[in-house]
Image 1 (cartoon, rainbow, N blue to C red):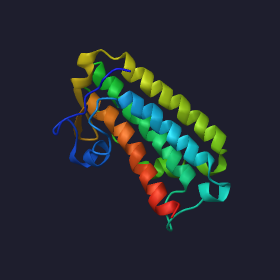
Image 2: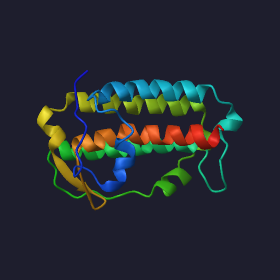
Image 3: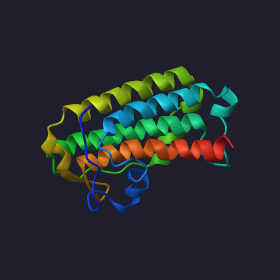
Image 4: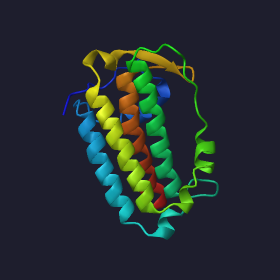
Amino acid sequence: MRVIKKPKDGEFPPYANMYIRLLPDDGQLLKHLKDNFAVTKKLMTSLSEDQLLSRYAENKWTIKEVLVHIIDDERIYAYRALRFARNDQTELPGFEQDDFARYSGANERSLASILEEYEAVRHSTITLFNGLPDEAFLREGMANGNKATVRALAYHIAGHELHHLNIIKEKYLK
């Protein structure tokens, strides 16, 4: 798979560092996206329905809601990356993640249907990044008042997933 170098400070808003720092500096982003999906799927299929519907605290998302949140976030960040890669200078809006989770219907879905969607989105994301010309990864744009490069958005996607997997392991499955 192609090498996509890790973004440097200044290519992403400060909050994104919490995600980007979770990934190694080996340029193997597409491999990490593929491998991390496999790890996520294996973990999720090992859980009971009660665990998938559990919350670690009042007003926190269920594991199913977390999974659909990861999918939603990936779709949005991949869309932003596409727009920036095509040098679209239109500032893009943000999104309210709590509203997305509230209206996702995740808890009424089967795990199989969530994982099917997750896999399709992940495949699409990997295909998008694999098909971009090298110079596109350094193009930048604005979303929700924050500047980011295409490669920073790509690393955000992978790191965001790892961030939530860590939360699931630390808070839901202790």
